[in-house]
Amino acid sequence: MSTRPTSDKTKEAIFNILPPDFNEKRILDLFAGTGNMGIEALSRGAMKAVFVESDRPALSVLEKNLRICCFFHKSQIVGSTVAKGIRILEKRGDKFDLIFLDPPYGRSIVGDTLERVSRSDILKDNTLVVAEHSFKETAREDIGSLTITDQRRYGKTLVSFFAHRRIEGQNSQS
Picture 1 (cartoon, rainbow, N blue to C red):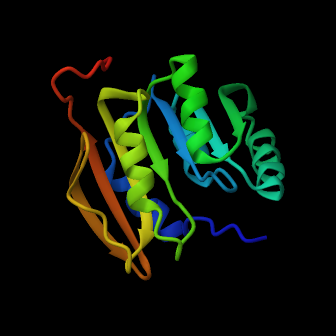
Picture 2 (cartoon, rainbow, N blue to C red):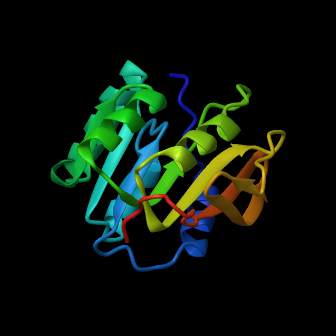
C-alpha cells in the first residue's frame, strides 16, 4: 500500500503541542490514509471525526481501524479526493475545530491544499490546521486566512501549525 502513516514520534510530538482539551471538538482528517491522526483525536475525547481519503485500499483499512477502535459511531468517511471532499463538507455546512492534512510527499500539493482549506467554508473562527509535509516543501507563513504559528521538523517531515483568522466580510462561526 502506498499510504505513509504519521510516525508515532511525530504524532506524539504534534499532540503534545496541540491544546489538550479535545472534548466537543470536531476533527477533519484530510488525506486520511489509515486514520491515524483522527483516531488519536477521538481517543483523546473529540466529539466527531470526518476522514477524507480517495485510495480504495486505504479506505478499507481506515474503516477496519475505526471499527477495531470502537470509533465508527463517532466518525464519517468521505471517499473522495480532498477537493471534492471539501465541497461536500461545505454543502452540508460542516465546520471543524481542528484539521489535519498529510498530502503525499513529492507532489508539491501542500500549498494548494492549504489554500483550498483557507478559502473554504469549513473553518470556524478558532480552527487550527496541522499540515505534515516534506521538509523540502515549505509552507508560506500566510495562506489566505491561515497564519503559521509554529513549525517543527522531525526527520524528513515538517509539521506546520496554522491558525485561522477571520477576514472582514468572511462568514465564520465560532
